[in-house]
Length: 248
Image (tube, rainbow, N blue to C red; front, side, top):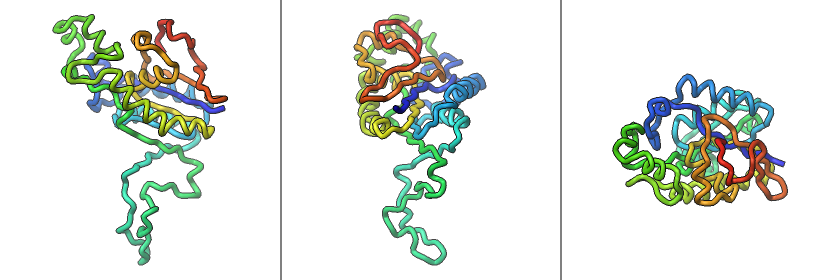
């Protein structure tokens, strides 16, 4: 059996300001840091092997705070770091081997590290005309029902922005190619990302309908825990019925 842990980032500065954060890099607040540390304590007994996150700082900060309670050290894997082929060491032409990567783990310490993979596929929704705007102001301009529809529905997003369907199309293939196989290999995995990229993954994992996904919301820094066994991912810490309204 292996674990899949899904966690939305802790409270960010724009959560407090009531702005649509989207692709803007906004750090955690003091409350967000405390939320992440509480999550870290809750997950301390699960020995994590791999981590995945977005390219945005609020998710990465949350992840590092969660990993602070692990017995291993998190280290980013930079897929495009280069081969080091022009580097020489001690007069030798070390680095000419194109299989060498600058991010490669030292063999003696690899077992003490948690590789962290970051990818744009896990980024938050791009909010288009709403990006960076105050939510209250946008509700006044477009109406609360319209804003809710753009933010909750599967097929339609804000003008010039992404729908949840668009996010699904980038996040789910990444999950299937990069994350799911590690669970099949028996690894315990954490994915620290955002409200909408994680809603897309949950929709895929649980087979939630386009209509019922409107009801799914994730609280800041609260883990959604799945176990993987016998070819199935099963939620451990909440009801499985997608028709039930709930905050995950």
